Length: 428
Image (tube, rainbow, N blue to C red; front, side):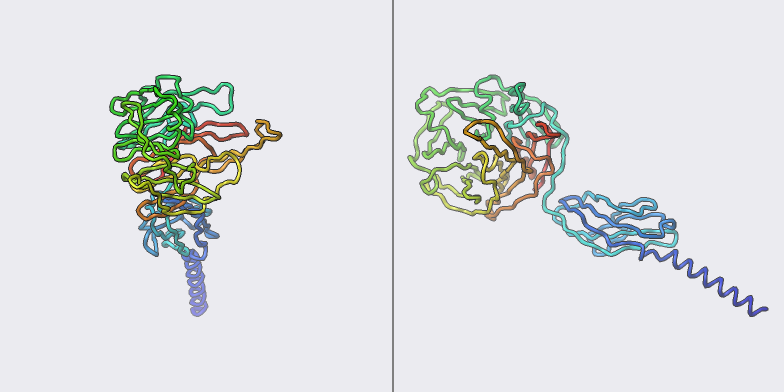
């Protein structure tokens, strides 16, 4: 009888031990973690807990820059959570991370297999919307740590569309917008917002030129001025790429002229100043008082460097551009510069066909706007992922410190045109 009782006690102890061991060991319940998407400061991860959920008190994701993250590092968890599909945020740019699932009960914590991912060296972040009217083809630029944005069109392909004249300043340190002096006239207001009319500056004065009108905005005095050429016959010299370098204003249009806004006059510098003595349809940008030319041909993007003193062009680099082969002739929308970088914004493209020579619009195709970065120091291109917005065109951008801001534009929503006022920021 004593032996039987002893046997029964040992059997019961064995059952209890095995039951406790089964309850305690949850490692087989955890799947490996899957990396679904990675940005510059975030990652989307998923996995599951397959059984034993009634014993789990906490489960989730833990991550770290060390190869074996634990719950003492960073965690995102919930009570008795079996299906995990979460976004972890606050990550550092261009950093290797390790992550794994975990689950805990009263006996301890168990971990799944570790997976690693590397964040990109940039990220798009949605900011608060622009407080003014939605618009596209607005003017934009930055100066002394602030962004400037305004004018443009309020509707697309509508009989009720009108030109906007309000003008705003963005302060990134406060994340606030301040309305400045409106554009004061109807003169050239529509032409001023065309995508092929470039803005350039000399100190705190910013300029635009179209037809016979020379328009300027001075940041210090917060004032606009509009001047008209006295010599209309000379206007053809001014239909080209404007830029300022070494405190002088130039315009390149086959010829190169130096322009003096105080007298509204010009001086011819070179009769032929185009790269390879061919017509130049690209864009000019200036970084650290060095002049560069950007042009496209046969789906290739070219960067030239221009020596004004000797009137010579040097091909710096080229890259496949992967642009469309039809549609309007503008292959990139605009450029903006900051530090050693030129940002080339390629937006949505409209595709048109004109049967029988008519002007009826037959169809459209949109692309997500994307950013190309050209590093003038390393002499190399980087193509950034498309901005996480709906496909659109006519958006604006400016750079402040180590950030580029992308604002507004027009796209479609529910098969109708829609004008936006959202703002996205990328750090670089």
